[in-house]
Amino acid sequence: MTSSAPHLHDASSRTDLVDWGAQPDTVEGASHSIGRLVHKGPNNRPEIGVWVCTPGRWRLAIPRDELCFFVAGRATYRRDTGEVVEVGPNTLVTFPAGWAGECTVHETIRNTYMLTGDDPERTDAMTATPLMRDPLGQTDLVDWGEVPTMLEGSSRTSGRVIHKGPNGQSECGLWVCTPGKWFCHVTSDEFCHFLEGRCTYVHESGEVIEITPDTAAFFPKDWKGTCTIHETIKKVYMIR
Image (cartoon, rainbow, N blue to C red; front, top):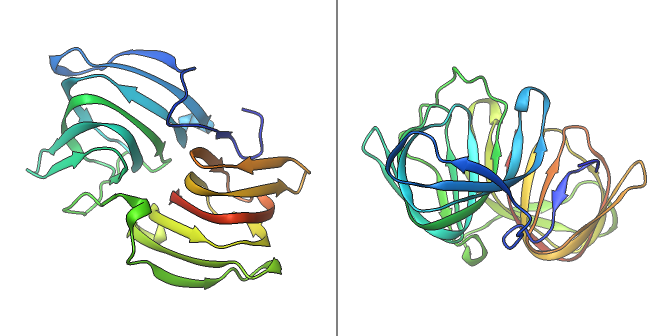
């Protein structure tokens, strides 16, 4: 995509997906994948997209931190450490670099994802895989205060972090922001899947990006412009 912030509307229902072939390292069944890239950076890092996979069981080893927001289907991830992670619709999961095990897809799954640009040799000390179920149903949010770069109104933010890696890397969670207009400077690569609300980003080049529910977007480091929130925004995100 040529946008300053590559994005995809209707991420949960797009049908213009590409055949990505049979799932490798099959253990049982014949899982098949289709998907669509939203962005792929230099040396394929980071990678952001939509992924769909049919039933089956297969081995996987995740080389770099990966955020997945599952919007449909049902699957069981079994880590070699013995941990079991059950996913279904509206499940947000952070798989740390070095996560290894099996995935059993019971009903065709669909997610949006960000695979980061971490060093593939790095492993994470987490003993449990961070996740959040039903982001829109979360009520135990933390007040993060007013946006400090307001231009009009008084946008206030709140949210919940499910994981923050070493030196603040791979921060993942839920973010909520009320209406207002403010200057936006993205200081680290950020993936967002907007779940609710409506807003307009205007890049310093003049490009206008309209955000509606179910928009997946990637804002690269040093993106600058304004954000006008028309209706309170709720999004899941990963910052790298």
